[in-house]
Length: 435
Ligand code: DLL
Picture 1 (tube, rainbow, N blue to C red):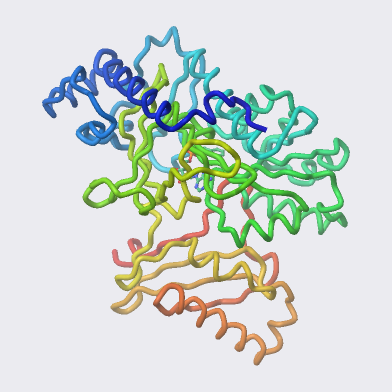
Picture 2: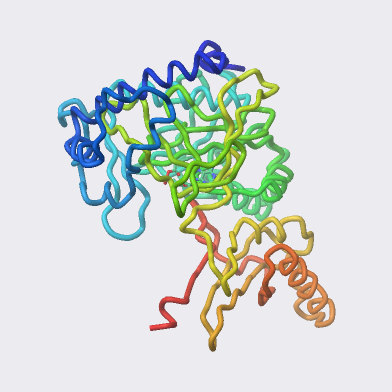
């Protein structure tokens, strides 16, 4: 179902006219209400009233996470605190979090954008939706929560963790829609099996997964284990939270809410604009947010955007599944490696489980990559020649895809850590070891 046909199927010409009007307004708004932007635009010699075409956006200096940190906590807010009705913060693990604020209108817009994505995945007011994201400063749970309520679904705010109970609720309530990170969904499937259930016998029918990457291969595993149809949705706390883009039932890219977010793809090194369909870093300008508007925010997420028509009838541009973050990219022996490339090699292999860890070290004079992955069948550990054969197959497939050699370590089932939120699968030990 299309939640807001007027906005979601607007002819592109009209949409672009709307974007221009909104961009002009937000540039002026930021200039007038946020000292940081006033100074930035002045320093760049930009007059907000001279913004005439969508392509003029490229002259505005990008905003970075460091700018947000420098103005912690409320320095980039455009409204007095009295008008801020909610705060969230990024999930940053080091230093101070980045704080985001919402006015009443911002919250209304957020619920609407979430409702669009939820409806696009096929969820209706008949569904029972269990939210297994952590409630709190993280935007995932409350973002989905209000969107689901907006479309009239029955919300089960079970939060993350307490996994046995999650499965009990899922069974007893007849949950039809699961909201989680893909990693946690996978874990719930595994845990249910240990508890003597098969989640594909439950009433689950749709999974709305996001907040971290998930290859199509991993998604196929989750769908098989859980017996549901899974869609991907993307967002980040700085921009609002989830709701920036999401897949429709065609699953050929994530439709961007282009009436509220202006998206660009640039070269992460030079910041030169990329052509349609080329991969680069996503830069986003929020066009309607009141409390915490952002001009040209560097997401560090790598993707590509296409504007060709989608069979669902929505006209908004689609971004590919996020390939990785530019700061997640590992440079190993001078070669660029994305963890998602490794995941797509491992997932289709039957003898190994979907749980893996990557360790990068500096040994001797060179970088090394260790891929640690769980076996499905522990008895293989005793059959040396079979183990060796499997190791060789994985190594050679990794070499073909990555162009470098990796050490493959096969370990016992259930010996790798499980995650209730976003997985942390990469351990880069190079800095510590070179000290
Ligand atoms: O993860 C917001 C969110 C919550 C999105 C729930 C979707 C569902 P942050 O914690 O600020 O916000 O993390 C943002 O997570 O820059 C991406 O690197 C990554 N990310 C988010 N969604 C996806 C996705 C939320 N669908 C950072 N695929 C972003 C890949 C994603 N990466």
